Amino acid sequence: MFKTKEDVIALLKTYPQLKKKINLLEYERQHPAQVSSQEVISGLALAHPISEGPGAAGHISNKTMQIALNFQEETDRLNYATVMEIDQELAILRSRIEKLEFYVTQLDKRQAEVIRKYYFEEKTWPELQKEMHASSRTLVKRRDDGLTALMAMGQYMEGVMKEQVRI
Image (cartoon, rainbow, N blue to C red; front, side, top):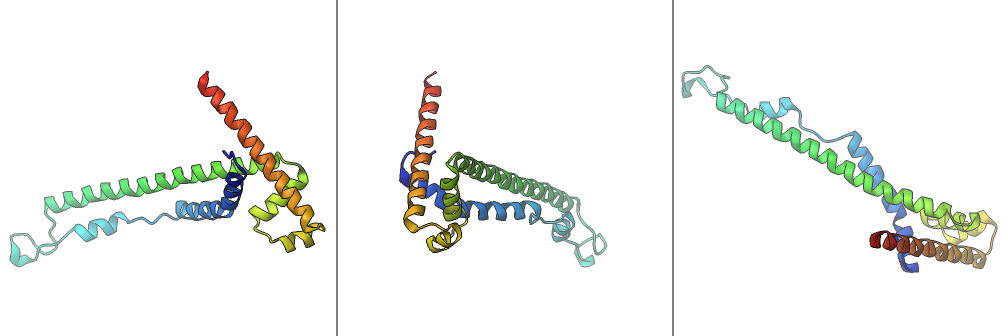
């Protein structure tokens, strides 16, 4: 997951963007843009005027209806594919967020608090100093110790995963 301090910081900095992406995808999942079957059929059901042939105005040929129905099936398939793509992306993002949140919960309480507030909530150092009643030096030390601990966890898990591959 993260081997270096830079990897850890980069991942922590993406947390707010991941949360925003999840919110957007959840909204789109609940409110998918879809074309109704009536709109598709109405748009493709071209009527022939009386002067064009034996049918009355509004007559729909069998070919036109077949095209409309095929188009509707394709529209349904595309709408479904879009929802499936959203679901897949949501699953990936949620997994990343859950994993990151879990790793942070494994830190010392004070380290986790600084990391959560600084990276997840995007608070500034002055805000943290005031809120946590601690000096900047203390907060930076807690953050750095937390980053080191996260890096150690990531390296440990990487070693475990490599061991699994060899087995």
